[in-house]
Amino acid sequence: MALEPVDLELDQDLPRRLRQIIRRGEEVIESFGRHRRDGELAGFVPADHQLVALALLSLREHPLLAGDLFVEWGSGLGIITMVAAEIGYEAQGIEILPELVDQAEELADELGVSCAFVCGSCVPTAAQDAVEEAGEGFWIGDGGLDGHELLDLDPADADLVYAYPWPGEQGLFERLFDRVAGSGALFLSYNGVEGLRLLRKC
Image 1 (cartoon, rainbow, N blue to C red):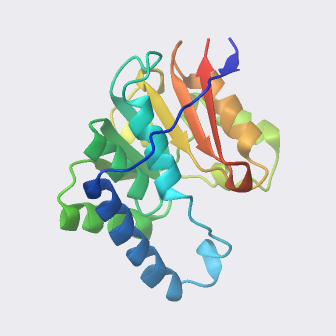
Image 2: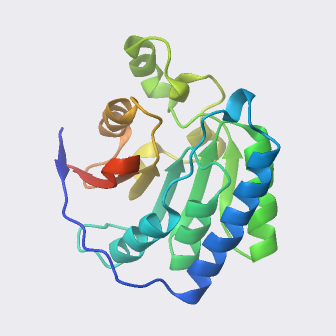
Image 3: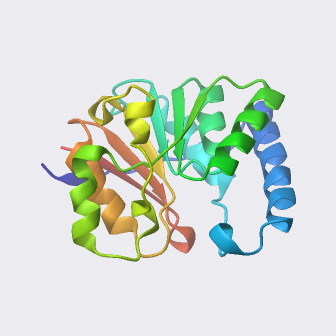
């Protein structure tokens, strides 16, 4: 198998409802961050939520998107998973830090968005050896139960996976996706100053 890049044309504007979700989510991030400037969340920088939302909106009608099942690897406070759910995806987020999962669930309830969050690892059990072989120092490999198993989900069933890798982990995320995704699945990632990257598993 291999991953091939896919061109992505973004819509020019976001519906009001999506902007509302993002605005409220970013307010929560700012408030949350004021109380967590050290420890596990040190160095955390949120994605460009509007840019990712535009991509998800465009992908909803993309001819290469096979279905509606969306999974976010490392869902944080859940903004992107909620945006995906509002667009019409069957959206599910996997996050390793329980306090972020709790906050994401509270925010989804507040905004009336139907999606699922679990506290676990985005690394499927069957691919754990790939992280171990990569060596120490990767945030993605910091233990936890397999989030896909908690969702009763086979990783190969996901139609679209989204992730915002920590610096230096982009290649590892792509290798994991190539290892566990089904043929034709799409992988969207946000990479800071490099922007968005969309790949398809051949």
